[in-house]
Length: 89
Image 1 (cartoon, one colour):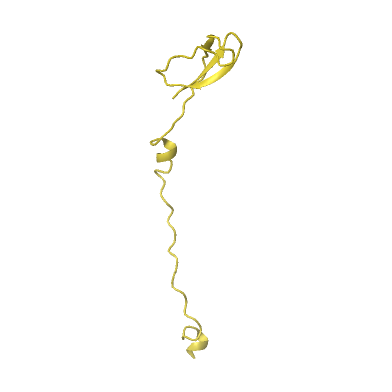
Image 2 (image 1 turned 90 degrees about the horizontal axis):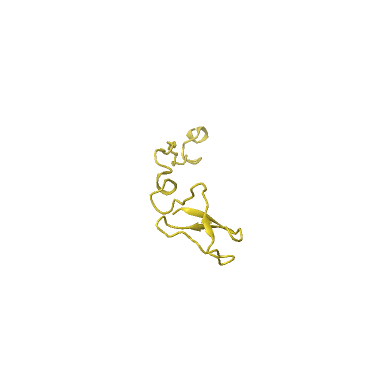
């Protein structure tokens, strides 16, 4: 939804309003109560909200996990089991 900026031509109060494009323009100033709000021309502002946007769904696509070397889970035999040169004698 776009964020529109309004300024009151009577008292100078400024505000931003989150509105649908199909919503009617605001006219009554919340500060002075007069119907003197005018929509300002400014850079478009909007929110990307919900599923399907880059931040939630596509941020990590295309990246492949790095290959990790296999860990040797086998523990070496303890001394006394014939695995070292001292036990082999």
